[in-house]
Image (tube, rainbow, N blue to C red):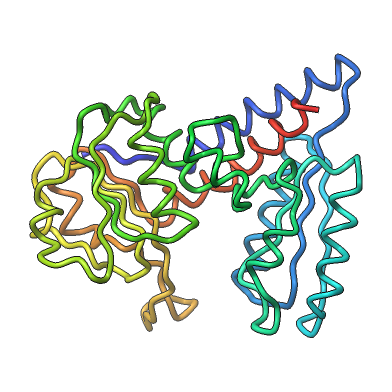
Length: 290
């Protein structure tokens, strides 16, 4: 069993991105600039955004963080997005999700300029991705592809099962892995909450991408020997033995699945760090395209 070390791979990527930034500066080009809008004070969102700001500093990006109160109106948020769209120094920006319930998430994502949509959520980028055209790929699926490529995991002709059909991970992952690309050319099945006899699919899969948000859902009896496991889930599970009162669990029951796996991502330290690294890579691409 080989651990797919997202933490180390992300660190390697950041070194490569930092070198590219250095070269841009030597050539007299602008420094990549990533901005983020955070509405409210959700703990997980604040942690995630702060880690993005630190990552920007590490690779030599400029970064801007716009913090707005929970009661911010939709109109005010859309104005902030418009300001970033029209700011030529900003190469890419993200609106941290989830948003407060009084704000229409879809309306907000639609307002982002697709050329600055480094999260890859705008319908223009999603459509271009589906047509295998140049675009910003959603950061988490992009990170998974990068892991598969760097660990030289064979995907061509393999049976890939994606569990989950979210717009952020499940659906884009199923599209990308079926395309003609290095980590692609696979036969892809998408399973979800209405899938019957799920075990039949999991036991036949060479590669499983678990992205359903249910902690430790996938267990050892559900997979075959030699499977590759990509665990996208991360949930706080109450655990009185931990100092913080909780532990982080993925969608995969690591103890029972890992002995049967050829490759597996840990939680934490697997897909999570890759997501931030690929957000940086998208921002670098946005800057270079200018």
